[in-house]
Length: 356
Image (cartoon, rainbow, N blue to C red):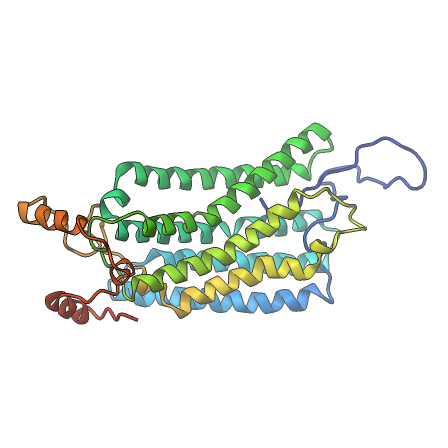
């Protein structure tokens, strides 16, 4: 994962140039890291701005969540985004505290752990959106048990990897054993690579769902056009994948001394590839109202549940499905722009689902 890898120089030597080590753990890192150690003059003003933005994001998403809950509109993803904003608020507070006490190693450890761990919630949200789009485009395949189990396995791996990487990061500050540090570094690099792949998954899932021929029309869910949902998801996935790829890419580079960091570890890169891309996603979710666009009926568990027209296996439905499979899907049908049937259009209007 994208956190500081505290690899200590264990080579023996003597002389005044030898760095004096603390006599007890936790030990400070000797290698450069993304963003470096925060300082009062630069990091506190910038971090305070992001702190304010994440507070606004938390308020917005929790307000939306509560308003929807009172209307019986269940959308837990708004609560998840609120949780992410709260994690980032804690991160900003810890970095401000670290800037005022740069030699306090426990604060540094906490700040780095929160930087690395918080974004995982946004990865999970994008996977949920991608799953809903695939199930809308391919109801039978999207609701197949193997497809559902694959997503559940991914969520379990995300949690296990998070625990593994957090443990490796903390242990790295409490040991001077070179072999243990090598193992910790390998685990951290694995975590960063794994999460970069997870952040990229919406692209093959959505594009594959568009390319693979469909045998039935889209199952509409939420409000808005299908192509707009795809654009929203891929925009968020691009931003998160950009940040994850930069962080893991720089982690694989050879380490440099803390006093001579590489140019790509500057503070601008840290704030852009972490907080900036994330706050853009948080704001995007509010502005486009993902709580309306990506909402699905409660208890959906089979084809037809999204649209409220579950296939019952009747001869008429099988004949109709067979006729649809015999023709080529047009661009309008692919992106859900085909005209609605009169009865269906009336139903959508009554439910307040605009096609924007």
